[in-house]
Image: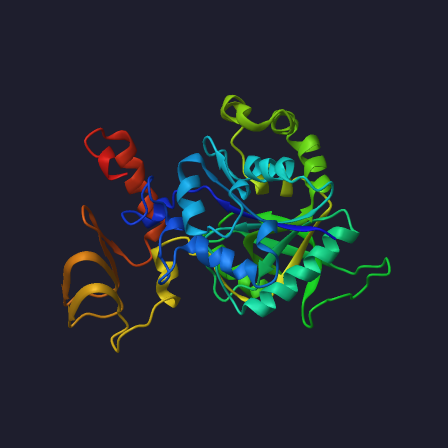
Length: 358
């Protein structure tokens, strides 16, 4: 079995403005600690697979920077998209670039925090066995610890048992695979609470496992125009073909439409670091519950997250705030409103005087 890991690293990370910018996006930054997120993701994969089998699909603008950050990867393994077309074309591009006839592909976002790595690795190895021995499109789900409105959900169906002689091979204790009954978009708070109580809904991790032929077959059926254009890509002609490809997510374009889909109920610790609130578990807190990174002083303040890149930031008598200060911009928001930072970026895009802050 040949396994290829594909890291999807093309986003800008708009919800992490003003830290994340177009020229220096979230995945290239040490958002969660001392190392860039893309470096952490590669290091995690290196513990259980050869570097030569790790591929990164990113924006054309970030290819050189990523090659500098992860020089151990062959330069040809870092592939640039001329422009973002969401996850389905990104995944399809990886599939057509992989030379092995029918490799198992494991797709990862570039910005997750996952532990312990050993449990993560053994779960993926078993997922690869399922992908090799069946014609299923497989995703990872995590049991929700709360009714979060920041994640999509997947409803478990019947338990899946491998019956072809590979039954149980390498299966981690306590881990099961299920048929997927439904994909659900990010719910409101009340609905998310119901999902948690139901017990059969898992958080959608955005991690996928399948054979190259199976995902390309699904694309040919459900996204025929995307599939046709991807097959025409030969080296440098990507710039003339890619802009005409439909912008579509893998969930909407493929996973919500197919019948041959499984979800593995994983139990490793997972944080998709989608907004500033997600950093709540990534840094230590003082006795008042404040996270303080950089040059920060707090007086009579509690439950704040304060990130000071350069200048001194002082809080006095405030609570429940997220404050991020960079060398040219500051954002102050109420904890719980992090998803709305995209509105700020949207405004910057349409205001000529403000575009310099993108």
